[in-house]
Image (cartoon, rainbow, N blue to C red):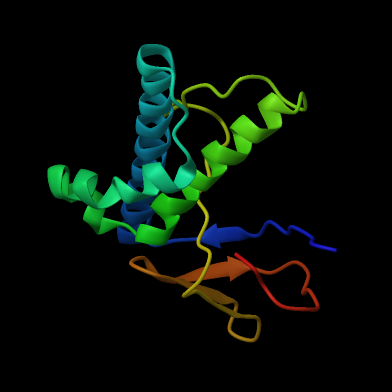
Length: 146
């Protein structure tokens, strides 16, 4: 069984900027993919898969170089989350996916690999962000997935 734990992060000022960039870029890619998927369906009647959208990410990163400042796997995970949202919608478990907004109270991005969790030092190391201080209120047994 998978469990999810949330911990409080204590980033430096520079890391706060990098976290905001990650959140913004992931939100942008999610909205870009949602728009592309909606446009393709309404105009051409085709449904783009998550792999079709992920194959277009390198071209988007060439067009928008600021997307290269964040972890590429986090951007791919945004597309995966969109795909999962559509699956839930079509299976009747959720409403139709909508565009993400900057001022939503909950914002998140996923780091699927290349991270390190250290309970002894109270830190977590994220790619392209660095080592963040964390308040671990409880430890967990098993392996971390993302």
